Structures are given as structure tokens and as C-alpha cells.
Length: 396
Image (cartoon, rainbow, N blue to C red; front, side, top):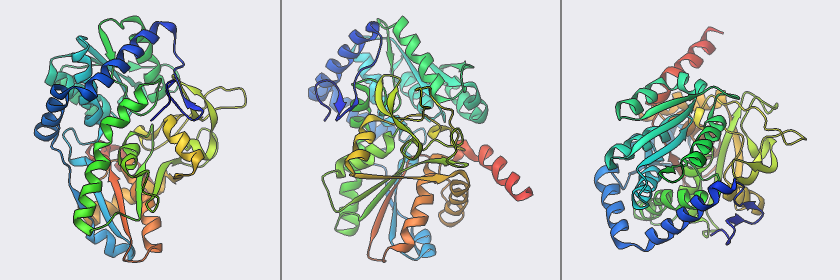
């Protein structure tokens, strides 16, 4: 748990304008009350089961296991949750919180579009007005998700400032929230931002790891040797890892976007190329120059294309409990294709980064070892984007 100031060691905190402090305090109080509110928890559990489709399966990837010739590989199938990714876990919980606070409007930011779709879905279910901010570049590469949001009655607002990606969408969402805080709740989509957002998102996403803990014991009679998840802001990874943090024999690996290379501006690997700094309300690792100016980022995956990472991840990195590595665009695209061919599962390009790390790790382990990987989302949204890169590579 973070301390009273919302810090994980030196990371985290609340770096926001005074106008937002009241809203953050109100949100923290509502969240802590909801954790103890039997009616809130009953409704959330019912919706998780009947609407989201939980528990999601833990699937043994037999053909990929045999192909790689090493550890037994399991996928935690968050791609089978309603809307096609883990994002619905947090979006549904926060929209229920918004309703409990009497706020009729929610806003969100989105990169790959999955959090926007999840928020639009939960808002439609609960009868809330919804606006989603999305970078203009991300809108172009995720046109299908833009239309899905619009179908559910959400207004998608293009952001044309800066790099026109996730960082800039968050900036605009924060400005909107500050201006309309009395009637609006900001459904922040990952374990970043000012306290209590990292805590709230982690708690709603930790259902992933709780289910996986029970499922792997049922399947194998013991805990896994290794768990792997991709890390953008970091919600799917913390959702998987958090219930296992005290299990010291379980190695935890977070996979960042290595992009084209580790040259500044060509990747989004914060632990490989970043330094501690403040971005969008929290202290964490940030891709920035020596003057603190936020650097440009790149990833083939819109959801990993972000200059910072959740503060709890920063703390887990510095403490050594979680090992963080990075995977290149090409490695992710190769993994995208291999997983599709061998398992008939199209991973999201975000999840394909985790598949690529599995491809590296599994052959070095004995067949008695077990890997659990979070399949955080499905790749339907990425087919057009992946095809463009894959076909371009074949032509080259």
C-alpha cells in the first residue's frame, strides 16, 4: 500500500493544481468507502461475472510450448473479457464510483483505444455521459476503436498538440477535469497519475492475479516459476503481479516497448532510457532530457507509447522485486505472427511484447518450469496496423 501521501518509496504523490486536490480527496474517500460497502461490492462482482465474463480462462498454450521446447506456457486470457482487454476491469469499477459520487459525466484518455472503449462501454451500461480524449495519431492507427466508442454514444475528442499520442491525451483530460470537476469524474486508465489513481486502478485490476493464483494451483498444483506482462502505464502487469509480490520464488518480468532502438525518441523503455522525474501528477521514471523536458516516444503499439510508467512499478524496479526488460517493434511483430499461427490467438500488439519475452525465456527453462503470461488484449484492433508493418518488411 502507498503511504498517507500516496507514495511508494520516493515515487507517486499528488502533483496537481489546487483545483484538483478536492476531487482527489473526494475520490479517495469514495474508493475507501466502496471497498467496505457490501452493496457496491455485490454489484461490482455481479457485473464482473455476468457482464465482463469473469473469471477469464487460464489457457495452456500447448503448441507454443512444444515449438519453443522449454517451460510450460499459460496465457491468462484477458483478451476474452468483454471489450477485448483488461481495461474493462478498471473502467467499470471507476464508473461505478462516479455514479456513487453523483457525477453524471465521465471522461477518459486512451492510446490504443481499449481504455476508451471500456470506459464508453461502462458509461453506456450505467447511463453516464462520456467524452474520451485521444491523440490524433492514435485515432488514425486505431480507427476501429474510435468508431466503437462513437457507436456507444461517446464523443471522441482528437488531440493535436505535442506528439498527438497518449501523453497529450492525458494532458487534455486533466485540463477538462480541472474545469468541470463538480460534475465530472476522470476515469484514468492506468496505474499512473496522482494518488489515489495508481492505487484504485491496481486494486480493480488485481482480480487478474487473484484468479490466476487460484487457476494455476488447480491446473498444476503449484505456483508458476515466472510471470510475464507488458508494461505501458502498467495496469495489466500490476493486476497480474500484485497478488504474487510476496511469493519470492515467482520471478516477475515486465516488458517495455523497445521500439526501433534505444536512441532517444525511438522507443518507450523508461527503465532502459529514463530517469526519475514528474509527469502528469506523479513522480516516477520518465523519458526526459537533462533539463527535464519530456522526450518523444515511439512504439508500434499505441498502448505502450508513453513517456512514463506507474509509480509502483518504479518502486518495484528499484527494490528489485520485478525485473524489467524491453522488446523491439520487430520482435513484437514476429511474436504477433507466431502466436497467431501456433495458437489461433491474435494478441494485441501490446501483449505481443510479452509473447516475445516468453519466446526468449521459455527455451532456456526446463519442461518442469511454468510461465504464466498475461494476454492483456486481443489483436483485432491491430490487424490493419500490423499488416502495414509486416507487408512493408516483406517488401523490403
